[in-house]
Structures are given as C-alpha cells and as structure tokens.
Length: 164
Image 1 (cartoon, helix red, strand yellow):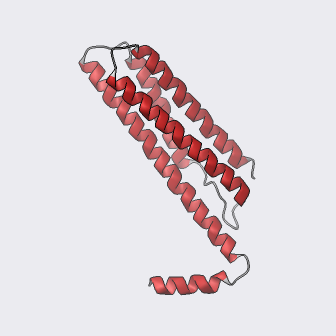
Image 2: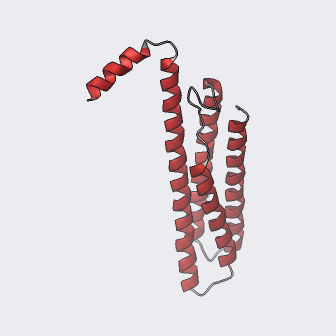
Image 3: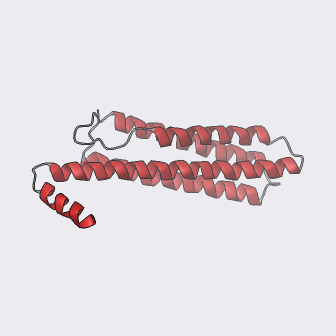
C-alpha cells in the first residue's frame, strides 16, 4: 500500500503547485502536533502543581492554596487555548496562508515558547523541593511565568491573524 501511495505522490509532484500544497499540509500537521505537545506539557505542569497542593494540604498549610489554584486555572485555560487554536499554516485553499518566511518566524517563536515551559517546569520543581523557604515568593514567580507564557501565546495568535 505504501508503494502505491509513493507512486501517486511521485506522479502528483509533477503537477505544478502540488508540491507546495503537500509542504503546506505537512506544516499544518506539524503545527497541530506541536500544539498537542504543548497542551500536554501544560496539563503535566498543572498536574505537578495539583500534587504540590495535595501535599501542602496534608501538612495543613492552606495559605498557599489560593495562589496555586490561580496558577492551575491559568495553566488549564492556556492548555485548552493552545489545543483548540487554529492551525499555523493554511492549506492551498485555506483562508489563512502563511508562507515559508513567516512560518520560520512562527517555528522560532514556538521554540522560545517551549523554553519558557521548561523554565516554568524547573521553577515548580525547585519550589517543590524547598517548600518551606520563601514559598509565597516562589508562587509569585510561577504566576508571573505562566502569565508571560499566556501572553506569549496570545502574541502567537496575533502573528497568525496578521497573515490573513
């Protein structure tokens, strides 16, 4: 079956413009997989915070729950926003065509976005390890980072909207 598909793709590649269409479709699929990955990472971060909340509640420390709940809410909302946002590269007949140069900018943006997720994950782990020391300051740092990540995602959507 894959030989048949390869043969069809070779024939179709000779059709003017078809190769670009295939590249755009691959870009759309890549963007979708990236958004799914980011969404899962955000849910993983939320789960880490939920585990932290459970341990804190077991210790009877309720002062920090409100701040952690806020971080969880933003993280979950952002996860849904990422997962259900429009694809970053329109197909040949799509309403929203993003060309190679703009797509490269988008990929660079996504790379930096992933670094921000890594930073947040690292901060959560450090806060988890040292819960007793300046924990409210660490919660504020985590909140600041997730707010920056959410703002960055809105910037990404603005970038995509500018290509319409």
